[in-house]
Length: 256
Image (cartoon, rainbow, N blue to C red; front, side, top):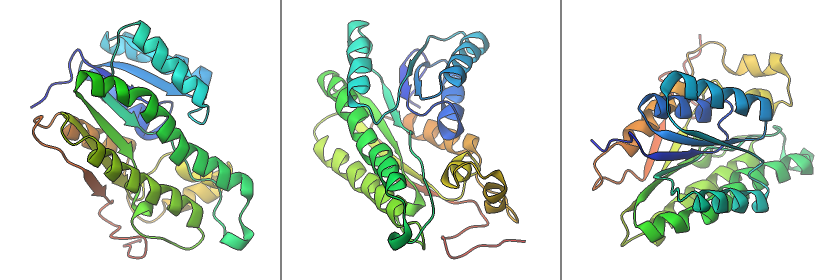
């Protein structure tokens, strides 16, 4: 087992869902965490909770991963502190809208592409060189089963997650000869703020997505990420797809 106690993990989009659950689990296991998010109050609250509960070092940076200059500023600040993340969890991402291509909102498209693809690239470009210089680290990219199969009215979100799958493969290829590992974790239906964001805050629509079956929970994905990063250093799990038991693909469900 490869312990993360005393190490540093950088987790983007940490104020809710997978990111928050991962930050909590890693801190519980004695890992110092660097958390980012757009919501200052939630970020500050999580920072205080993790410090008090687990007695680890917590650094927080409030910004949107779509802002390249903010990504670089964070990386520069970490460099000045002589902190190189041992684990990078590219979690920040979203779905916005569910429409046919010819009825889609351009603003939704830009938000998804800029966050899910460009944001992941901005963070990775800012942090990965530090890992390469040290020749050690682990990159976790949160993808989706939407990056494996296209479904109706999800075209641009699908495209953004197909891009994450491709970038994850590319990062692995580019890191051959180093000791840095890279994996995409691709969940199916999971009960987070995902649907609420997708439906622009419509909680009634969001709740219906999870009716009739037991979806994945954020803690499930956090446990999977923990398993991956604590695997022996000679083991590189490059892609892990996980569905709730009631779902076998976007089209095959057991809903009551």
